[in-house]
Image 1 (cartoon, rainbow, N blue to C red):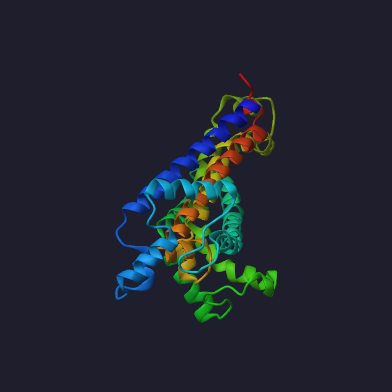
Image 2: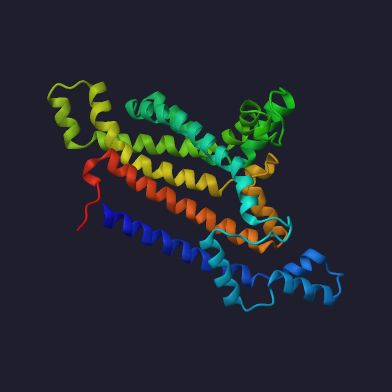
Length: 316
């Protein structure tokens, strides 16, 4: 186990290092001067030079990169060019919206996809299977931003059950806050749930064709008992993979939805920071998202061992 953890930790560090280098280089080659964006095109050259000195933009690229990585390792962060507050504080505030939104969307996706995928597999090539697979294909085809607009028009504009956008804050209570996140979560969960339902169906059908399943049925085990004791547990192994990847995508893919619903989360902060050339915020956000993805993949590997003892890592 220790060797497994050491390998995963090395992968974690290498991925973050690669993400930091690529992010820094990509932002370096982008046209535009953050100092000029902040002060405006009519600002005098002397003021721009002073601001560049204040922001550290006059330093060599390597020195700025090493300084940035050093700050990340020590847990400190520079001030945002736009908001004039530490980037870590900005990210923490926005994560309080994006993280619950992603968790709620993932929960809704699993809640609908799991029973539908199981039912479709049990009704293979029957009318129920055809209906569910057709509906899932439609769900995959509809862009989440279009689903978000439809939800706003129906539930906010016509029925007035929900607000069209905005977030009241957790200080107003858990109920109002979750209500503000429900429509965005449904918009995100539609595509993910459709994909997950099809994947669950395929995983179950593949597992049902295995020899040990036929052996269990030949020994007199009922179809229901075979499904719950043998099929679902083994089919869960590939499903865990797709769930982990979907959750990582939800964390990184909320930019459009958060802007449609005017939610002040990570996605909206990233888009605003790119527009404002707030490079310190963009860099920290990209590395944070990469760290989350790697961490989720590590958790998925641990879940493998919990689902199937044969997959437990051993030192070699």
